[in-house]
Length: 156
Image 1 (cartoon, rainbow, N blue to C red):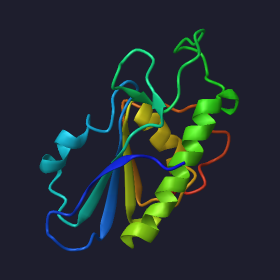
Image 2 (image 1 turned 90 degrees about the vertical axis):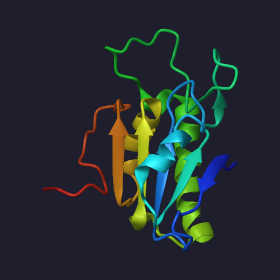
Image 3 (image 1 turned 180 degrees about the vertical axis):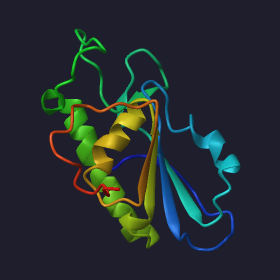
Image 4 (image 1 turned 180 degrees about the horizontal axis):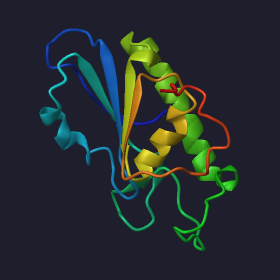
């Protein structure tokens, strides 16, 4: 399964040098972050705004990367390894990100992934597993504590 996404071409009219992928939060959809594009002033970037794969239970046009368990409390640690929707979304997002090079010619090392809220959590999740140029997280969270340093993070 592939993710449905809005693709915005570089404003300079040239093929992209870099990619920016923006992930929406829980209950929003890919239109939520599209209004930011004109303000970013990134003429060499192609922007992608993927829709999360699952319909949101309370918002008719909303999407989610995964649902939160009924018993979930924000003080508790979410056991990411037990969340089937999270595991599925992670794999779909990683596969989709890797596939972008074939369609755009831009490697992962020139791709920035940014996310808000649950999209920020997904950004942290996949951003520590793939050799991305950068990750940007706004109001995000870790799915689980990191036991080891992330695979692709630079130590400063």
